[in-house]
Image (cartoon, rainbow, N blue to C red):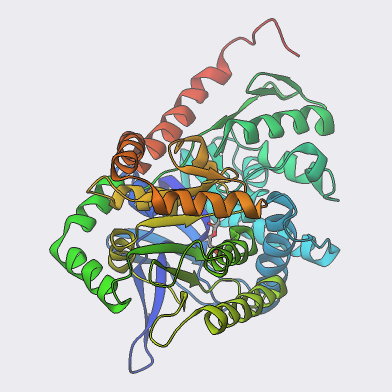
Length: 474
Ligand code: G6P
């Protein structure tokens, strides 16, 4: 059956759950992306194409909560080479400021091309004549061009959820030109921040040699591609409602109790990823205690690290490093029943996250580089009493909007310690002033507004590219 809207992403918006009898079923995953896209999908008879997360070959399309999902299988070798290899061993560190060293392997690239082609072919099969296709993220950057070759009638949008690096770094990639050309298959290429869109335009001019003017690229075949920023957000009203619920309010109090009612709770919640700066922030906190600026009665640090990409070496090493650091800090600084750090290597449902956000006095988000960071926005949305402090890295996309946070450079240990201490000691009036402004920003720019603006631009760009080119081009 042909669909007027196809969403293409590496992951499907569902989690696989195995019940007691070993039977596997799917459960809708509560991500913001799906909640934003769901209404558009329903209105346009949409379908979502994504990797099932496993290697089984015979998966049929299925529905969860009325959403039509089409799973694609990757072989075990493709999981290793496309997903763990090129996506997360090459592109992920390259696009995050080389926080870790990217590896370049020709077999990984071949697999990336092959898997991207599978996504493009499946999408070409599913899309109705003139349909809109929205492709997501760094795992699928070749899909726009492959799809355009198969189906020139489609409107194609691409959105990159992670940073897009400056030319000086991107240049290292042996397949830089192919990636740029892959993205240029789209009519609209969306990024988190204006700087990323500018990096892309500059690279297209320098490396592919196309004419560009501001946010437009002019292709030799007469097509125009627009590159622009669409900062992603969260379901702010949904989080706020959850935070106000009785269950979450009670759970937040229970969490404080379980921690021994310390005077202040610091909180970090991240995927266990080396870009997130978890190690440095825990060290900064540990030093504040060993320096005598804080005591374990004044403060506890709750760090939730969500397991991620566990078969990739950098991730395994990071886990070991953090395990050791937490053990050392608690051994050196904690007392019986009063650890310095409460460390949880697990993932939690939205309700528990909301309760943690409500329980925490200081939220610490210190990535070395991050496309946006939705945890920072979720914390703000859950602070219904307009208090609580956010310590936020300048290198997270969210820092562009959350200007009233305590902004820090995560490479500057002393700067980070000073910010943690200031946030710990801030007066209630100061906290409210800052939190009010941030809450206003998040309420006005939620994920629905994000999806609407991307879809509107994608539709409008269609009319735009048919118009006459402006005279001035550079
Ligand atoms: C980031 C990426 C997503 C990715 C997610 C989880 O947010 O932008 O594309 O799905 O991390 O990572 P995973 O490797 O588990 O899909």
